[in-house]
Length: 84
Image (cartoon, rainbow, N blue to C red):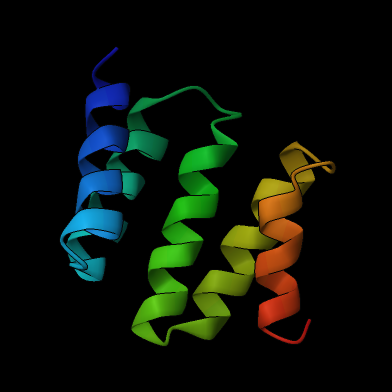
């Protein structure tokens, strides 16, 4: 169950502290420790990467999130922001 703590910590770093490298790290830990289909963490890692200017990594994460949940609008919007 620790994956939820990693996810929450990543969210704080992403949205409150604007520390995108740290956010991406904690979302990666949540993905590693969590269930196989933990697409919100994948999406948020993509958002962290997008804010870091790592657009290829962001695109990959958004596509992975959509592969798990094709109806996940936030990931589709993320791809749209990237012009994909």
